Image (cartoon, rainbow, N blue to C red; front, side, top):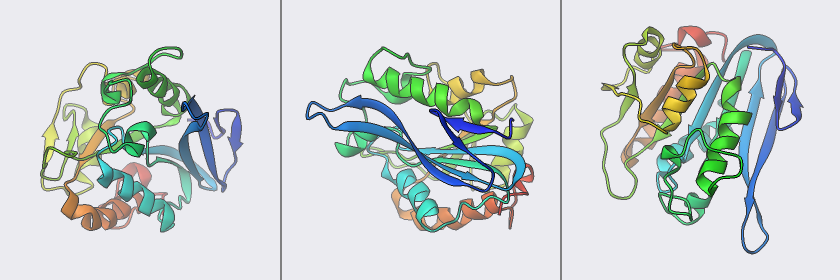
Length: 234
């Protein structure tokens, strides 16, 4: 990846930390809704890790995991860059709803369009401003209001690097999950090479928010079950 990082016209240099807001739409009250992207850059050149959560507005666990990693200053790369997006579906989160106000499932609206439905516009901004910068992505999900999932990682196991990165988390379960049409995971996969960027999901039910944070932090930092591609992240 290029050592130069620019999102929505804003440049982020080596060693810098910035919050970039992507303007999505406006509420009837004329309140603007932005898509926040937290950017953490190391001083040395390296890979780019994208963390996303809240594609479904009622799946709050991943939102809190990413938010806490940001607020607790866990994301401090020595090399490379970390892009953290704690809430992708801002509208759904504000209403504690799985879908957007237009009734669309954001995770079935990719790659989106610039002038389409609200869901497709959110997807378009993510796919055009953020995803092309990433080398690997982790998308946090839970069961939402109606489902209870055992914590696991979903990825396409036939992709060797997916297996390598998934096992670095030492999860109890890794699910070989095919990519679904119009999903974020499939769109992210298509935007890169056939094996890149690896895109996978981490699902966690409510009681294990706390245990997941040190596990994920250890994997990102390169201490404990390190992700080989991110050994320069500390």
